[in-house]
Image (cartoon, rainbow over all chains, first blue to last red):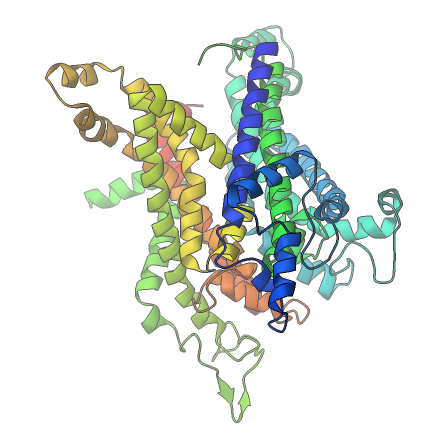
Length: 326
Length: 286
């Protein structure tokens, strides 16, 4: 177990290094130099040179790479071109909003998906299955931002039940994240984006839970439980469901990593001040340090959660030969 | 008569796949006959008398009403099928081609080739899909080409992994051994003998990749990184969102393009689910 964990950790570090190097290369592919995008033409050549120097862009590429890597290791992501604040500060402001949105919607989606999936495995065939499986597939097929637009039009603009965007009502200021967390206004704003994501995300756990349940129901220990004369419901819920949860737990961890980056469109639709929206705005306004920082943060969470999912799976399922040769 | 009953039998056993196929068939037909079917040119600014026909509700003249700039929604929707098919098919073919070839090489050759490809796949899987596409689009030139390249460059590892696993088991079969003994070159065994065996699986992944590609194009367009000159469903949704269609309750404008996107992606899911049973009969027994 320890060896496998170490191996996965080494692999994680390798991928993190590769992804951040790739990011470095990617952001230097830009035609021209980045200052052209935010300098007005009236700036003198000296101002431009001073700015280049300030951002360390006058040095040779390999030196820039080492500075970049060194800064990254120290959590220094540079200064935003446009907002004049450190990128790390801007990201730290946005991250809790994204994490909260992701956690709330994923938890709701998986709670619903697990129960509904187990129920569908319990009741095979018939009208319920014929309707609910295509419905689950359809919610996965719909573009997330369109689901958001439908909910926004129906529940915010037409009925006025929910706010039309943002994280707080206009004029309200929150000093700390803790203040925000206990404010009803914040949760009221969270409701629609979270509902959108939940609708989009529930299909996967539902289908996964149903499929693994059907598989588990054929296992020997289930036959045994049946022979012991336990009720069908008890067999399904207490014996089968527990074992069927494994892949679902793994998918949850993977989903956590993926949604932090995947929230991009939903955050944009609802003007939710999270990492995804920061990335979109930074990219649209050619604020490269900020875009680069947001991108690295999103990629790092994805890679880390992938490793976590892998380890969780190995830890939870004794059947996975730990450290076994592939 | 016989073929009709065969179709009926297929429909009974694989209703999902048939419905998915029917949706695709309909979209292809609409795309081919878009010029004839669309009641107006998709970008024409229509007028009522001297005024621009903005935000018209649904009517006999405009089945799905008009946009904020006086364009016919139904005509745009019909023309959108072409963009969706073009992006979806190109990207899916690219994903499947890259994934299949790399999976085949990695699984059949093993050794350091396998190691390098697997490493490479792991790195690509560490790149978040939409953010990577946005960054690529902003650093180069926004448009359809970037979308297709991103989909191809970022989604191949999923196909490659499955193909690799399949090839690992195929290469131990007796007929591969037989081909080797008769003196077939490695390349010939891989591409003439093994490749055809994994193509159905590759096609399965392709039908899902079409959906991902179309959703990727729609998301990119919605975020402003698509090609504004292409008449795509994503561009329609972006225009609707940016021009207060939501606050005006112009459902006739923003509901249809999303529904069309959903239908097309769903068709891919349904086909892959249906053909999964044909390809892996063991699953069907459960």
